[in-house]
Image 1 (cartoon, rainbow, N blue to C red):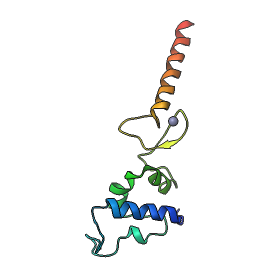
Image 2 (cartoon, rainbow, N blue to C red):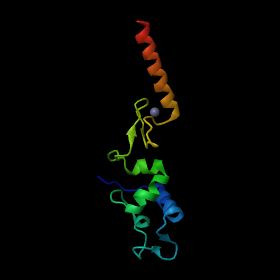
Image 3 (tube, helix red, strand yellow):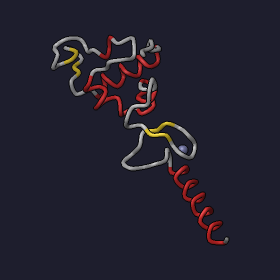
Image 4 (tube, rainbow, N blue to C red):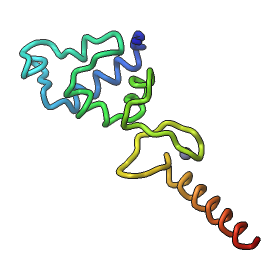
Length: 117
Ligand SMILES: [Zn+2]
């Protein structure tokens, strides 16, 4: 399922490409393909430039989540505390340290209840 990219997302993509894409050149466009950057002409979600998807898009986790929301990408996780979809950093189970703390407290309370009888 693809949707049209709103102007803000296109602007963000353009910013990411021109700033971070190692294959992008202001004069030539996409260097390896020797043509205009595929991502800059993009108006719909769906297939993205592979380099962009893997190396550039993760620099903006919010945009990445927005572009992949048609189905959670395999690397996204759902926070068991607040239910938010997030991009795990290493092996985190929670979206934020606040949620990790909340989960830890809840677990501790659970243990206390158990051992108190
Ligand atoms: Zn959370």
